[in-house]
Image (cartoon, rainbow, N blue to C red; front, side, top):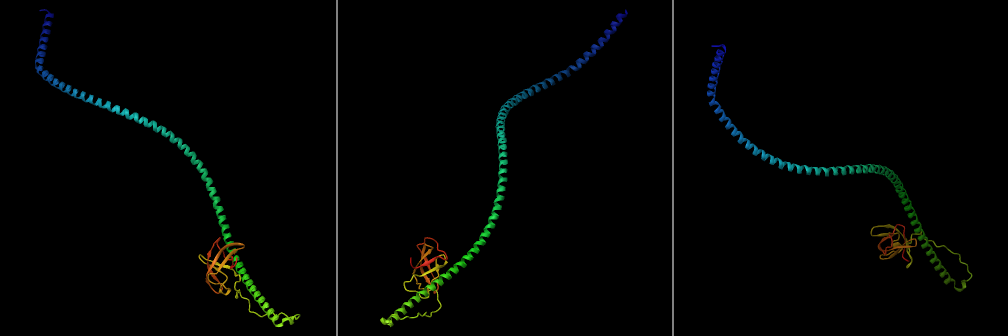
Length: 287
């Protein structure tokens, strides 16, 4: 037998051994592959079912996502519109802010001017108050002087009235004496010179004797809320319900109807009031 034949026999033997091992191995593993195939088929069916379920859920989620996308797009559009409006409002707000800032600056200047004006007014007010205090003091002093002058004038008027009453008495006494002398002398007394004799009399009082029907004159001494007092009383012939006319210079003021009478003064109510009476106004019983 040749060398190549021996080699070929050896190779064929080895191939046969290898083939037998492969066949044995195949036959031994055929059952395992079937089980694995069944297992993989079952797994594949499960995966297909799960894939179908996942596909369905994916489609649902996709539809929901599209719906949400539409809603979000609408929301985004709405927000963009609101953003545009807010941008416009922001621009307007900034413009108004600049305008208000200008106004604030303007008002700040006005406020500064007002503060200066208020300071000047306060200074003027203090000066006016000082002048008012001085004027009030002068008014009090002038009122005091006026009261003193009024009292002095009242005293002078009373003295004049006393002198007038004294003059009337003396004139009446003179007339009575002349009439008595003429009656005593008769026609034979012509040419006889009679020396005048001044009759003695008491110290003059303010109209202590009043001639009936004489014009009573006086002054207002006090002005109350409802009554006005005058400088004449019962000693001067004043009686209740007597009417006095009040004058200030040549101006008629009112009438006084006497309701209360004392010895040296009287009081009454006002009638025909043209103006408010004052202390020192002239009163008389005749117009």
